[in-house]
Length: 328
Ligand SMILES: [Zn+2]
Ligand SMILES: [Zn+2]
Image (tube, rainbow, N blue to C red; front, top):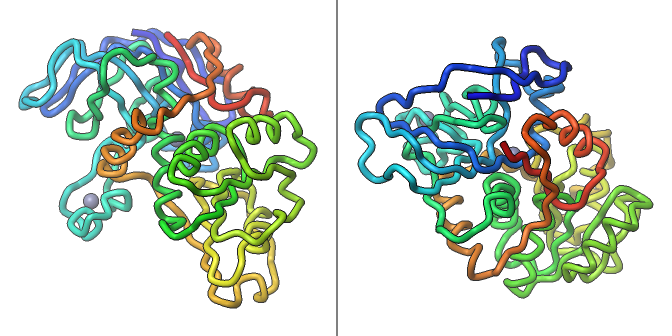
């Protein structure tokens, strides 16, 4: 097999030949059809997340077909199409696993970080942490659903059912997917982009956003909730200003630059500031069930696997709308 490997932080990924991985007990192996490029992959390369200390294959939005099955896998079969997300394994017996919060497991493995991921021609995963996918869907179009979609979904749920007007800070892969869900649910969307990024603002309006503007602007009315997808701590006080009394601000990213000091007035009046971490398997089941009902369309830019470094660089500089996807 081949993979784009990260051998040390802050270095380009290297095209590498490796022995085919063998699935262990409870595991499956897939032939990768497509793998999405997530901002978390940049945080891994940049060591914003602690570098695990060994070379690794990034990528946690994997769509593939099972081509080998390890012992003790009974509910999946060779040739089946599956999705492999960020949450690769949990211990099953810590306080968080036992109370329905497996996203916070004390001893997890994360795909494309602490376990090899999908910037590769093959990947191995725990059968119980993969999602069966229907036939007749496009691999590239589906890949971004497995993190951008899932984390976006968890963030929208945490923003609250009662939030009718929702601000989205950073209108990239996650926001463009979850905006479609929110609109389908009858909510209003307000899109905040980098100041002056009229192209992305037009994109947001084309999907049905009520309003789109720069993150340095205030929305035309105060919002019920805002979700911050961009990894920019300065957006926290900005988003707190966007919501009315008792409004909620959800930080959806795994890493953010430092949050600047802000006046308590911004949090006062029962505004809430919360974060979202990882996903549970139930999030995946709930969200993937919604995808066909909502008719979600992802906007993607496909890159050959060998050009993963270019895809990451384009993501870093906001050079495309929607999501980048690698194709082996
Ligand atoms: Zn656990
Ligand atoms: Zn991700």
